[in-house]
Image (cartoon, one colour):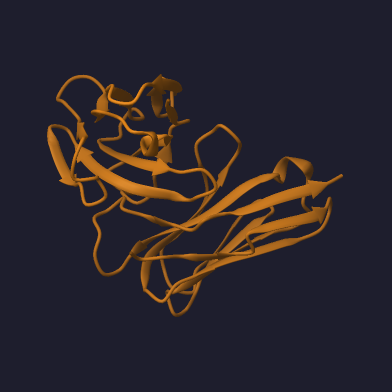
Length: 114
Length: 114
């Protein structure tokens, strides 16, 4: 099936550092979404991107929809302990799939050392 | 303003029993989606429903799994004759008509099959 390659798989960083993670695919996407999941909880939406080249911020988070529509990145600036969790990218394929039928990456597990 | 409500949060079943998972979408949301998450994995799309209609069930296993969203009441994901491989977290999500790909997830139902 279709796949999103998300990297890195995990990150251990010092509080205050910036973080960058990305997702790539060989397929073209209409929508990119970034979610954060805490243990035992459901994913919570961080940022939604709808157009190629779109750059969107939400507080310390910034995400971009790649020009080729095949990739996206998420940056977190000045990390704090509560940023700990698993970050997922998700997208809707341009070719095929109904609305809400999102392809998810395998996640980036972020650990922050105070 | 309640979010997506799922119950039960945890369910234990023996092999061969039936599991029923319930989901009430956010107020004003008419689209419901079910996803499955295996340990250390991203979420996988199962089914997309509107009231009394299955719109896309391309991610549903062909046997033992069924979903409904009746005119009244919550959406139900039913797994008959459960097997150990069905052990997973099952997430329901809903979206409003104007932003169908922006999914809000519930906290999930964790099924353990003994």
